[in-house]
Length: 268
Image (cartoon, rainbow, N blue to C red; front, side, top):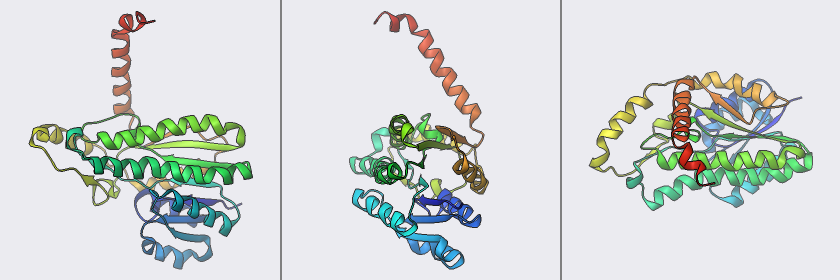
């Protein structure tokens, strides 16, 4: 049976890829975005299989209203994909209060509000799958993206707690952690703080790291459909070959913990 899938940030990037993949195989999609006119071609092509809704995820009321509209329209809610978000570039000293709050409002609070809105529906159904789009940047942290990493680490933390809270209610939680893909994340979708000259050198090094991975987002379409269909989905799913950097970071972490183990234990 076709699924009802609610996707935030559906107008471009991963959201657009996953919206099209689901529609092509016959699922019903509630595609939300700030600018839903970008989805007009899909409405024309797929008709009643797609419901487009304007949604600013930073508004808790709007998130609850959108979920209720989706549920009223299709009669159930099988999957929620919290994809809306953006990257903010800036050294920690460069990030303003306004920029920090805006990043957290979208990436963290936006995900939280949509999740909270979906939970009562899924509890009533005794079924559902919430997929949080985190990032490799929700697992490890690089320079110049500190506030972005903070938002994704926060999503990882509350979602891990949530998974334990709803496990007996029939609700599944998955954190999807993509590596570097050729989406608009590095382009017009991103924001940057006013630069300070003191950080120019570290930014140049950072650019080399960011340019080392460039995966095709279209390849993730079938992967997401497979994840959606899993009866026992994983809590975490990495996307892309991110193992070299991931292994290096975790090896370094473990070494530091072990090197300082005696001092740590002395605090017991």
